[in-house]
Amino acid sequence: MAELAPPLDEDAIKQLVPFNELLRHQFQEALKCCELLTLPPRKKLFKRGERDAYWYYLLKGSVDLLDEDFNITSFSADDPECRRALDNRPPHRFSSITTSDCEILKVDKNRLDLAITWEQAGDYRVEESDDNDVDWMSALLESDVFAKVPPANIQRLFTAFKNEERALGDVVVAEGDPGNLFYVIEHGSALVSKRSENGVEQVARLGPGQFFGEEALIGETTRNATVTMETDGALMYLEKDEFKSLLEQPVMNRITEQDLDAMQADSTALVLLDVRLSGEFKHFHRENSINIPLNKLRQRCDNLDRSACYVVVDNAGPRAELGAYLLVKAGLQAYLLKSDSE
Image 1 (spheres, rainbow, N blue to C red):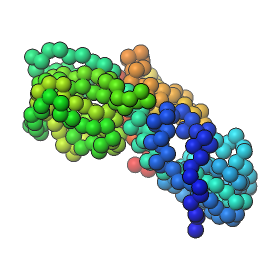
Image 2 (spheres, rainbow, N blue to C red):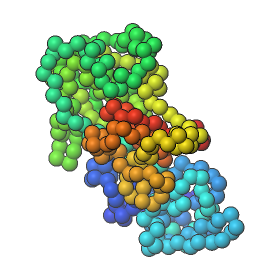
Image 3 (cartoon, rainbow, N blue to C red):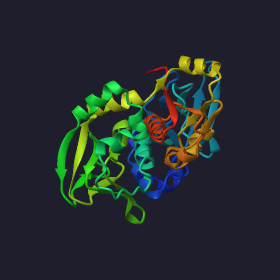
Image 4 (cartoon, one colour):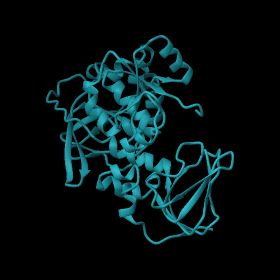
């Protein structure tokens, strides 16, 4: 049975992909997804054909990778390839076995992906709204997201909204907490703040008709910012299940590989978009796809070709779903490519 090795070597982990692209506070969050193992020779790490919930990085020692024809490729921790997880494209194409005493960094892929999603999604634009006489329903319906909601869902949406009064200084959602509700400001205003290396920074101001909280629900992650009431006011909110069935599902266009082939055959102007970090993209990516990491997508949406059709490829977990949503929110035609396993 594997034994835990000494404490994590943060300097060594900072050289690994994608840890090398994270800011300090992001990196500290990502460390929570890691476990350091010491293994003797002749211990199996993973088996060819399996879909693994973990990534394995070789920090010390050596391993062999065996393909289906029993050809062996040997790696030692000093090899440049070991900056990336061993055989990290699911399902495993190789079986892996240690050939010496090893230190292995075992990383929970889903937790790491959620941590990166949470950190990358929190880059808000500052939006000012000084008009408290704005009708929240009208303002909401004028947004690009709600413009895509089928008419049959609109009445059901507004019937499902619940109201709550809030006072000046109330914390509506707190950064890092679970996300279960989608909010719209009915009247009053709220401030959005986020932790950074320089402390807590205000990143946006929200007024009537503006909404928040949806990204934690779509990305299935925790809140990426804190929202505090700037004035007395009232909020409308949807429960998570109502949000997903009445709003997220209608506006998130999911397509299959067959749909994609048909669109390409129809000469549709398609842009295949990969929202992973640049180091992940460089290691492997879908042919003809371009890379805009999720943490840069929000700022670049305004400069994207509005006549094009964007297909977010499905190799980034919740980041892909959130990326597709951000494109829709910006008024772009966007689809999410579903994996064969869904």
